[in-house]
Length: 377
Image (cartoon, rainbow, N blue to C red; front, side):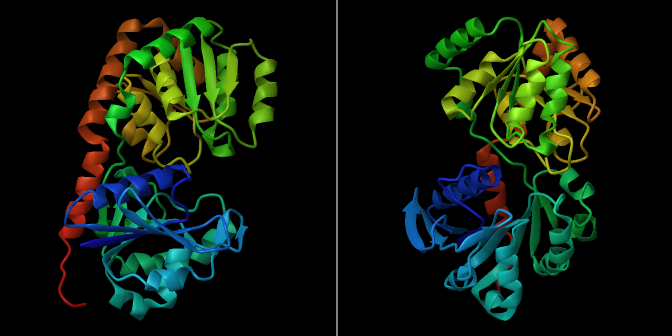
């Protein structure tokens, strides 16, 4: 069986979707009876090819970008060079969908089955959504299956409930071995705890509108006994720094860090907070990373996969959106209650091991693809 994935980017890009694409492609390539190919857009104008960890990758030349979307005129051509059992596209991304629909008959001959991995609806770009939604619906009609990471992805979507019979839930996964508390990590944890006094609250993510970071910074003014470490970068950094300076001096900012340093920060913190306020936050992989380290999570009451991953009073706490006081109260409750914090953290790690490992994700996807009928179309 040959599986082709089409996505906006691939290694060395390290975004959330790109990580999932890499995990799937490398997991497929590791199987002796499977072939794995990725078609992605390049940062350069030239098209190049490479084999990375057993995955055949084509980086299609990109002329420019329009609102972060790559303009790659030859994307369709390179997609049609492939012949495979399954084509997986990661939505929302326009190029594969437009390529498929404009060359539908040829695509059907080249790919026996189309799978849409639905990461989220188009939330903020309303003009784009109006233009692309009819195309998305045509793709959804054409797809053999639609993969979502949680059942909440279906119920919170404006589009998917009409196609729920095609939807299959395959949760995102991580490699738990990445988050082991080794001797070197333990030493770094000790250094971090010496540097920051009091209970440590951790946030990791891009500093953009939908992450709700400002509400967390405001909440920390009501929790002077704790210290917030914010890891990430983005257009709101300066605004958040000014907000923190006007507070109690218990907020520190770090640029994006290495995986090893982030692992140490997860283990050093007492609580992880994901204060996202918009449905653009469809899952929150950082939640399961923190949970793998035995940390309770505080998140907001989004109807997306965020609250499927972090269960209120089971693996952490769920609070109302855009409510600094509610965030502060939840942080205080966990800071002041060692037993509750420990119980939620233990259950959080158990939940990751039961449902959110990369091996489970890859095995589930392969089983789905092998279950498709493979007669003549």
